[in-house]
Every structure is written in structure tokens, then in C-alpha cells.
Picture 1 (cartoon, helix red, strand yellow):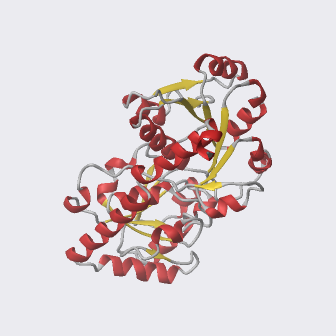
Picture 2: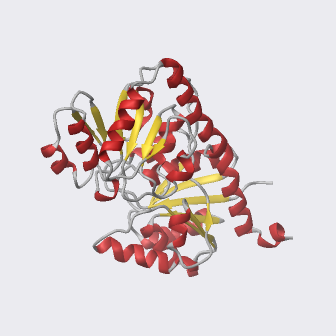
Length: 346
């Protein structure tokens, strides 16, 4: 039996957690024989890193150019059985015009933080209209509780690296990876760096706080800017710091652990479920900078055997609960129930 056509739709300006999630989901579904299209509402630069990556894997992409008419024409031509949206804009567009298309609507909600300004209204509309979809998915229980309708929680996931870089590479780098914005609390990295002047800290990412952070950073903090694909860097990162105010289930934590990194994070979003009882990983309240520094020093003092044990524990947690093989079948069940509700409920 031929598997259905599925659109994964998003509106994306930069590379981040949503983009990583969509890329992983597209590749996982493509491997299982689905007719997958990743649909961009519009491009904000000459080319998008996610689109380039997907095309290299032979996955079809479509750019709508911000046009509702092009969207409706593309739906009639491709006839997707499922339109699975990610982010508020693609979700709102598909719900508003869902009356004119013959496709089941599935929406994923990723944001753990409460946005401010104009985006707050978009986020509010996104959540208030969520019941217009046949199925709603959240990446953490915290996000699910913000929606006033039935929600299925499905964790983010990653594909495990094919090489054992966690054993062979020099994993001495301590890093922050993420958007340089308030909800990620990157200023806490600077506080740790001032307390540990002999230790280097690497910051990967960009965002509205970058200029302020660069201006106030001590000499042992190194900024690398926005990195479209972290795969070349994970083999050298041994410890990931996530001192966030708010999270869902951050893809960078999963990517880091899949590469054998240890993670220290604040107990927000789904991070407690991910890190609890994983050897080498810790949960620390964000304002307790002294305790963060103590944990970093303890990590530095590990011997080779402890390093290998920590790496194995991180990889095992991802492989068992947060890998493509563990999670993609849950999306398949969601799609099957949306398309053939009578068959799956029989």
C-alpha cells in the first residue's frame, strides 16, 4: 500500500530547534517510505540551510513565497493527506484556509517561553485556534498545559551519529549553544566565565543579545556566531551548558548527548525528564552560579574512565528514548489516526 503525501510546513528565518526537529522528522519519514514535502512559507535569505540539507538527502522542498494563492494551488496539485505545521505562522495560515483544502491538519507546538510584543499576539492566536486542527502535538507537558484542548505529547528526537566520535575526539570544550535571547539566559555564561577565569567558554549562536554580550564578555568567552550545522563541532564539545529561563525539549541537548556530551541545565520544560539519573548530567537552578561553577570544576576533574562512562550514559538515554527509531513511529500512529480514524479505532 502506497504511503500518503505529508507536508511539513514552517515559516523560518533562521536555524534553530524547530528547524532541527523538522529536518529530523522529514528524514525519518522519508526513510519509512512516505511522500514527504517540507514547505517553507517564504525564504528570508537567498537560501535556507535546512532546505539545502534536505535537498542533499533527496527530500522535496517547496517555497510558497508568502502567497496564499500559491499555497492553495500547491495543495490542490500535491494533494497532501496531512499538513503538519510547525510554528505560529504556518499553523494560523493552514487553519484559516483549512476550509478550502482536503487535508487533515496536525500542529506541533514547540515554544516553551512566553513571547513578548507583537509575537505574543501571534502566539495567543496560535494557541486559541489550536482546536481547529484534527491533532495537536507538544514537545513537553509544560507546553501542552498552555493549550486549552486535547494534546498529545511527543518528545523531540535526533538521529544518532554513525561514528564513535565521543571516544576518539578531544572533548574538552565547554559550550553554550542556542539563540542569544532572554529566555536562554546566555548572560549566565558570562557570570560563570568571570568566576572561572582560567576556563574557556565557547558560545555558538546569534540573537538580539549578541552585541550586549560581546561588549560585556571577559576574555575567556569566545563567540562563534550562528552555526547552521553543529555536527562538525559536537565531537569537540564535552560539556553543554543550558542555563535557560524557559525551554520545551531543546534539540541542542539531544544532539549533544547523542554525541557523548554531558549536559548541565536548569530544571525547566522537559529537561528534568531528559537528564534525571543520567550519569554526568546535572540539573541546577539558574541563579546559583556558584553551584554551576562547582559542577564545571567537577566535570573538568573526570578521568578517562569517567569520561567514557558519562558519554555512554548520554548516548544510551538518547538511543533508548529520544532516537528516530523510538519516536518516528509515534508520528506515524498520529498520521494514521488522522487519515483513517475508523480503522485505527476499530
